[in-house]
Image (cartoon, rainbow, N blue to C red; front, side):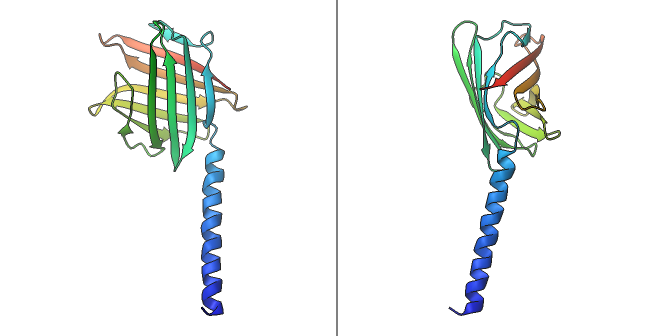
Length: 161
């Protein structure tokens, strides 16, 4: 292999490594990424009842995140929801939800996102999430309906754990 070809291969490899590092760095700066625990006392549930706990894990994945939420319900059941989505507004499978089978994410700004849950293509819930400027609190404003069609408006306050 001649010197020019070696230099070209080295330059391409270095560029690929730099791009990969930049993508990892951009994901690690996503303020949503981390482990969060619901502060039940600071949260509001209408109509309720409040869950006993929610543990939320958000990991960087591609150009978005992989999210897992494990809820201990008021009656003692455990529910786990999970999805992987980019911030492109495209529907992806939502596992573990009783009311939706897809979800999508859109970034509003650096600290806020909008999640839209759908059941068979119809919007059933919206969740606006905002991370505090200090990165210690994650608030989720949830709007949905009960199975009877009554409005649901929950404000979930998570703290970084």
